[in-house]
Amino acid sequence: MMKMIGINEVAFVGALTSMRKAANQINTTTEGWDSMGEQSSVFEEYLEQYAQLQSIMLSYQQLIEKDIDAISKVGVSMLKVDVLLTNLWK
Image (cartoon, rainbow, N blue to C red; front, top):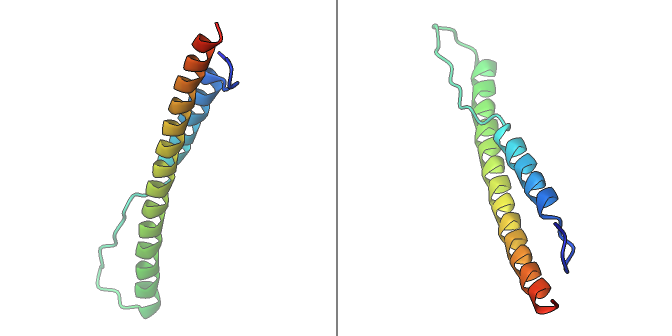
């Protein structure tokens, strides 16, 4: 319900839910490789780079979650101020 500030609480909560769902869908599963005796410097380099990519994706997911938490805090504060302003102008 929109009040003085005009933030739609239902839409805001829905957007936060969508953002959290998207953040949780980032694949941060750490996968390894069990060697079967093969020897390949190219493959070893690939495995190292893949491990780096997994680490980057995990950091990216954590940063997104931190941003979503900050957005949520600001939104909750705005909703509280909105209620106060509505009560003030009644």
